[in-house]
Image 1 (spheres, protein in one colour):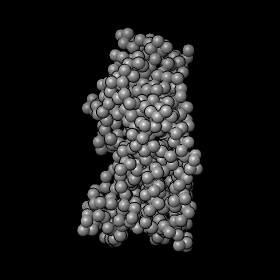
Image 2 (spheres, protein in one colour; image 1 turned 135 degrees about the vertical axis):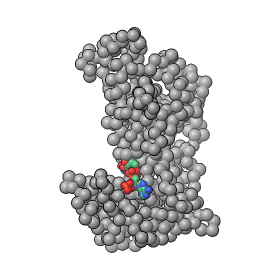
Image 3 (spheres, helix red, strand yellow; image 1 turned 30 degrees about the vertical axis):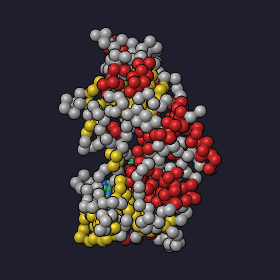
Image 4 (tube, protein in one colour; image 1 turned 90 degrees about the horizontal axis):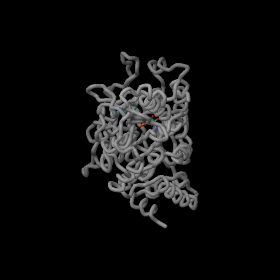
Length: 487
Ligand code: NAP
């Protein structure tokens, strides 16, 4: 058979197989065994692309530390963005392909190690995403009432690790630092009415807590100008369409200066559209709605000020101006103008960050696994660690939308297949699929299979149907185990 390399990968293997090192990996008698670590979008796109390989027999085991699959689609995408979540239908189809197994509730580093995986798989792909937040180093950032937006997002989405987090929604004034799409999500959830939230799959406890919310004023703070804002046009447009929220914009903060104007090209329609939408808000009369969402630009928080109990009570902001770097980008620099905004709750939403995996080389300054086009490399020798790969946010950093992970994962998979054709795969001692089940029976007997997840999925959606919601989520591991083991 003729495949993507002219000859099939299998034929090519025998050509490169000088030392008889790799014999027949990828055939019926010796399928290519791949472990994917992380059941989010990048993991599923990698699996999908692997299954598309003609002439190769591939078996995929996907691991996740949670019992539930889909990563950020379940635990990150905002509950009022159900359309985006429908991508899980595509992932579900991949999961139901022959040769795919899901091992949920299995933690790499805790239950199994990289060395364990090397004993069972020819190739390992890390798709663990970016599980923490970038820090904001200003005085007062650790005061009570100051949180990472990532925590709030995980909390309202019912991520089991965040169920017990508390956010003081008795405050009337809230600041959200950053103007990316996550900041936009957080602002929307804070400003939505109960009726708007009640039709979503937001965690029940979050729905209850937000019902009692006293939040009136939300300040979303951009350190640069509107033309440099990270949010996208549809997302900022949606802010102006909420039921009970007036959007407040200061005209002088969204007037484009000469630097911004000359940086915008005609081809850059997305930016032009964003600028138009936000400038449009500046001219809108307030309608006396119960929430006011203030979109502020060219300001940076320099300090959080606490009360006598160590709770944040205000934020000190400095006004910025833009300057052009030698590379031609527009950056902010502080002026000598300051202001103080009274806020009792602060979310820093300045980007996610990957966390290291035990036994996998990590680039700490970038928050990603050391890799070249998805091949995990030794940072000292720059050599590829044969059989190890990365895809998604843990490979390239937290950028782009869910679909961006598709070409990203395809690049990694193409390199995996090319390496296989070159005979560069790990040689596991126990490639037989049963060996993994045996290992897990010992290490994590409570692991979740895909059919276990399907059972939870059915129960969640059935409970949702009764309430006119997409689903009612199980939010603790105990609940998930009990539901799985119920009759
Ligand atoms: P992001 O898009 O990278 O935005 C980060 C924001 O934080 C930027 O406004 C950035 O400003 C600001 N920032 C960084 N450091 C700062 C500092 N020290 N002080 C003040 N501001 C600072 O990150 P994100 O919002 O976490 O989103 C991650 C990715 O997920 C993005 O690609 C996003 O589009 C995507 N996402 C998409 C959706 C959707 O499609 N609906 C929803 C959520 C997330 P500068 O630009 O000045 O650095």
